[in-house]
Image (cartoon, rainbow, N blue to C red; front, side, top):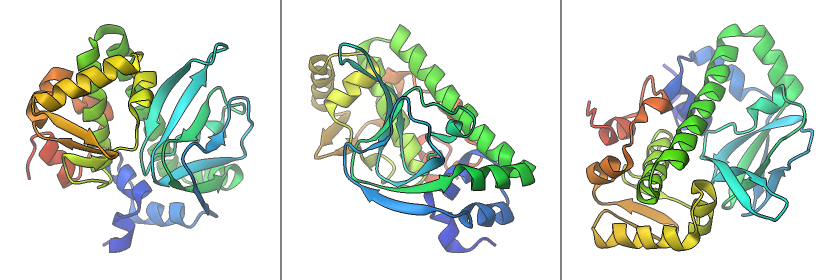
Length: 255
């Protein structure tokens, strides 16, 4: 059996929920030359135009990927939670076409490209596991595009809150329907193509309806079933293969 402590490493929990990965491959990943760093909110991990030489793993905290237009308007194109490797594509795309920034104080781990490339060249199964993770990131982006392009504001907001709840449950950051959510209303607006006024109005409506409460950087969902219905949330695009118990409960697949 894998040592208990490995099950609680966010990267391993993340991979175990979406890929088939062996104990030996888990150990190989954790034996890479990783440098950990604590950073504050608003820290730019890598900026658009940079040519990074290492990948970033999120151990604690939230980050986002974003683009900024000439007029200063920002579009957030992804939120990332513990266990994510948000810039894995920098192994092959040499110049960053977006920025990666922390949304909260965070603990990060950096893996040199050369060390990771060497491991993946020597280990086909591990390469497939990480490739699958990048494909799931692309699936999440497609879901976001569909939501922004076709759903009303109320459904968009409900959908992103459902998604973040399930994704954090997959690495056991939270308590089923109560999670730390260090994302401001302004950041939600930048991710969903809405105004902050619209986001605030709908969040207040959800609170009055007894669906949820977002206070002090904590999201508590009181009526998961109804919120999921409003969002038309279907977790298939997250491609869980072995969802943890917390995720199974949320999706109605009690064990």
